[in-house]
Length: 519
Image (cartoon, rainbow, N blue to C red; front, side):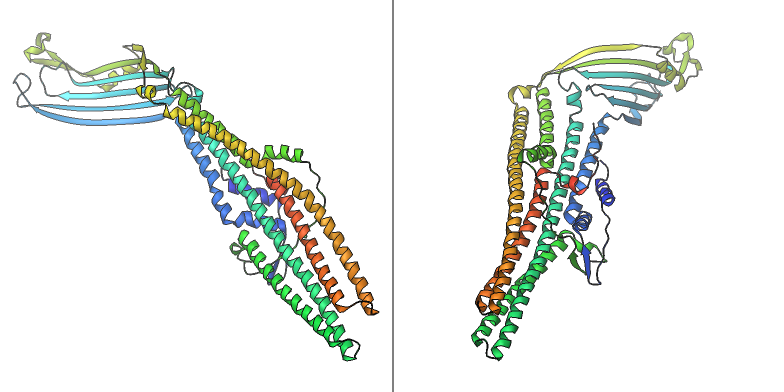
């Protein structure tokens, strides 16, 4: 997977059109736009988005083990040694030696290695009795080594690639989980902000009712129709509800700042100084889903379970590798090589170098040595087996024991994650159902509170009720409205938590990114 961050943003853009509107000091913001801004600007996402890319790079690096390697070597040297005898040379023996080599090596998935190399040299000396000087030599050779026990097989050879690919998939699953968590946090902050605004409206409506009653009481007290104590009672209630307004306003500011922080509004230069006005209103349409259905979906889609399952695969590969390393090393080796030699041939009198009388030379160069090597003028081959028994594995099997523990730990971790997933999904389904029932119950309670208050106000007009009773019913209505709003918000948060527990948040929000298939 390359540049997964770009893929995420592109997919969001395909399903999101960010249209901001509002006054100069405020911005209308939908939930969808809030999620878009969070995924675009959230610093936690900015950190997490790099992990899949790093893991993908590591996987690409691991695959490079099957790329052929090419090496070159060149050296030159000059040696000067004193002559032990006038027969060798007069004064000192001087030798010049140049050599170079090139080797191409290839690793195979079976664990075998094939190498082809070309080695050439040039030797020149003033030592006497040389028959070829300077001398050129070349050797073309092929060597194949195949492990038959330890380090044999596709699974062992490709271990690093498999583990790296698994780590890339785990990192991608973790990133997906981070996205889901961030989206839930945005939804939670958005709906809590909506609740605080709606709750403030309910408090303001309650304050308006209290003030209207206070004004009515003052008028009646002025004409002697009402005792002054009733005015004091209404004034006390107005003061109490003004205090409730202060608390509600503080909650609005706190929840607004929380939403701004999550979506990192400071990163948006055009709107960072403006107040947010949420556009979406919470709904309470019923959503029917059984626990069994939710469990089936969650077991398939939850990214944490996906990561745990992939981790088990990696641990299984490591366990197989540890077992393989306990085997003796039995390697099949086959070699084939072709030498070549050339140079300036020195002709001595009577074909006897001991005469030290040179009568002529026959020129030769390095080309002839290379021609002999590449034409396989002199064929050589060898085949053999090499057995090595690692003594340390006889006395210590710590690596195998560690691999077994890691494998068992990964399986237990998956079982634990599945149990936690079962619990979260069951709770989420129950919360959705119970919160929907709460919405309906509090809606009915609010409607009854409205009718009760109207009835009591009519009774007050004809002198059949008291100001205290009306004020109490007003407060009951304000509480009923607040409870209804809280229940609706909780229902929407329960739906978001259900999507999170089933791992379907991205799918339901239309946010997708493609996973690149690996080896």
